[in-house]
Length: 283
Image (cartoon, rainbow, N blue to C red; front, side, top):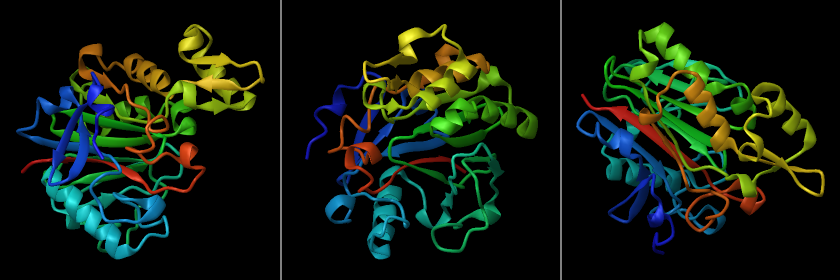
């Protein structure tokens, strides 16, 4: 299978290494001497059927050996040790966890005590962070001055709670980062035309974001449902939190529009594997 469609992206860089296809972002790529980052596609692994092939979750009723092999391949393609991965424990909240070397391996080769966490942060090198997706928004953060990385999982609940802004403040208060130095990327997730939501969800977003963004954030359909743009909401949140436009990449790829390249919960009606985002600072 070729990545013909997503190669047309003007925001993402598409890579293939030993059959493993993944995505990086130009504003983070400029720090490649010090930083590893990537967002997986569903291509290049060994999982079968609806989990094919690069399922990176142990919680989708996959063969654990297949998932481990997928992690080994993805790690080799990006350049980190999969046995050092630190897993998030995503529950659609806005809780963050400060990761250290003592956490390495939690979630992949040993039991994890990291619970109810949708955001991971570290200032230590050679500690790869991983978060998981199948339509929700992956947020990447890097402060090249303080040498701090972070990842946050932003579903609609996290987005309306402005998880991106909360992560910026967390990096400031816990690590001394300055918001004007933080470089961010909003990775592939479900797009507005694919994301129909109910009136109660729309009301939550109108209460938080107001109506000044018009149809670019939310518009009502004839059936009374709404189409929500999580990309716009996350972008607005990060810019209002002090991230500069020149330090922000916003995806132009949709997981639901491209189910042959990405796992999508909505496109597959829940019958799918998980994508993942990874970040690590080099030692």
